Length: 523
Ligand SMILES: [Cu+2]
Image (tube, rainbow, N blue to C red; front, top):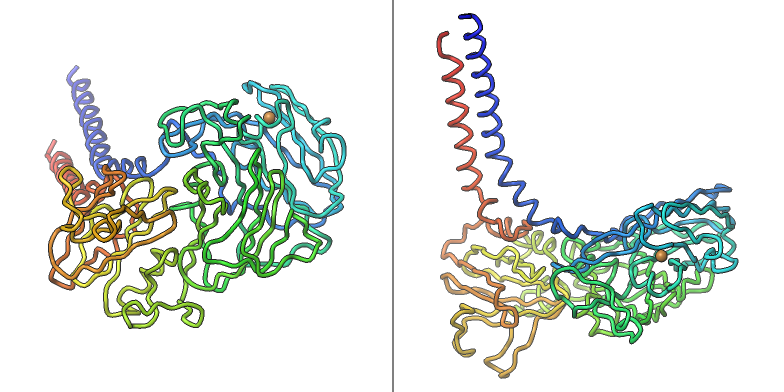
């Protein structure tokens, strides 16, 4: 009886120790996981965008390949706070890049899961035969179709679902590109990206929060609410930017799924060295091209060289579509190239900051403290927030705001709850004091201000007054804020701060000390 009691007490002690250990570990891990949870996609609407770098390597000219596409209907994020029921190939928009060599024999499997609501199929513009394979691949939910084709012609081809109502299936996200490389393959380049434009037609207007359903009326009227690259507003900006280095040769496989609009493919700040229009890979390319027309149902392979550091912006140059999501960025890092472009804004030679699109956080990191005597710091504007929202910089620092959103914003000194008259604002990107009008920092553009007076400055966006930020300008030159300026945080900044982590770690240490006392206690 007595021995039994001792055992109970020992078990209790073990349980207590395990509990304390768990609490001490959680006290350190939990705040970080909160940060991650907040900076990721909302749980209710997963990200269905295919990464533009998710590209298979060039195929060996094997005789026969097997390709399996699963036609999945999946809830996903169309824009921040906007969810949509996508119809997809393999769960992403666009579907995978199918990469073949001319002459290859392909065994194509279309699998439609049992929980699908619709029959699905594939029509590839690179497949010869009825329906581009559509007549061979109509697949009801819970079934699989298999057919074989030979890749007869090289080219960059659109594929899409070919089940009636076909345009509705395309408008819901069922498309991708099939690349059939010529004999001998494509020349090697440093970077390849896969971008497909498509429209979405929703019952609510652009940006209306919550779940949105497909609007057949708007699709028939050809009035999309969203025109996006890779299935989502912001898929290829901010953290999704396409990263390249100065000097890189860059190739973009660009498709336009439509289903209605033609695209005027343009790279702001870049010139296409070669453009293979309409996906025709064996024609001589156009050289030195500004804008390529990519009709709905077609594709283009374009190549350029990244010449200068900064942000290049890929758009459909029917530019109001930027306000519907049609904007992507290349972030180019590396040494500046004053022989190509330089700024004499401060009379000090090349400055990496000014103008519209030649700023990146990376070039700023590299340049601060090394290239010039003045400090510079970048604040990103993304997802309708300044990031980081609160920074501390020494006097003399030039702060550059880079707008990665698909809409325009301002950086306006003051408190949005009691705005100052325009002529009393310490700084204001809108220029309202001079012009009487509010000019916006457009998508892909940047705006800079050099702080010459110490103090604490609040600022906000005139058109989105819930966007607020703060800058503390210190008289001393020592500040490590320019390093932390690139940490991608939003609402949980305080938890991520060193003091928060230290405090929670201290709790863990106290608990561990208690544990050791318990363990050291004589029996
Ligand atoms: Cu379909």
